Image 1 (cartoon, one colour):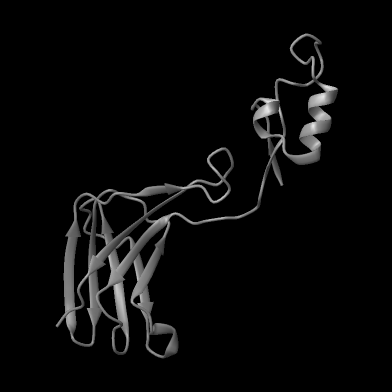
Image 2: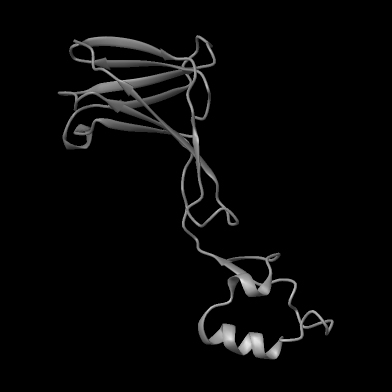
Length: 148
C-alpha cells in the first residue's frame, strides 16, 4: 500500500478513531507535535492502463486486424490481430499504451479495409484509487465502422 501525507487531520478521520483522535488532539493548534497538520492516506493497489479503445460498429466475422498510425507517420505503430475463433468475438479493441491526440486507424476484415483518421482524440484521466493516489491513466474511445 502507498501512503500519502498532507491533508488536515479533521478532514479525513472517521468513526471511533475520529472521536479518539479529536479528544487526544483537541488542542492540536495550541500544542506543537500533536500531529494535527497531516494524516495518513492509504491508497489501494487498484491499477489501470492508458490507451485507446477502438469500438467497432459490429463484431467482425472471422479474422480481423486493427492497425494504428500516430501523428501522421506512415510507419505502423500499434497492431491488434485476431486470427479467428472465440477470442475474436469482440467489437472493442484496446490498444494499450496508445496515447496521442492524432491517430489513423486501419481496420481489415474478410470484407475489406477501412481507414479512418481521428485528428483530435480526447483522453480522459482516470484515477482508480482517487486523485491523490497513483496511478493516473488516460483513456479515449473512438468508433469505426467495419468495411463493407
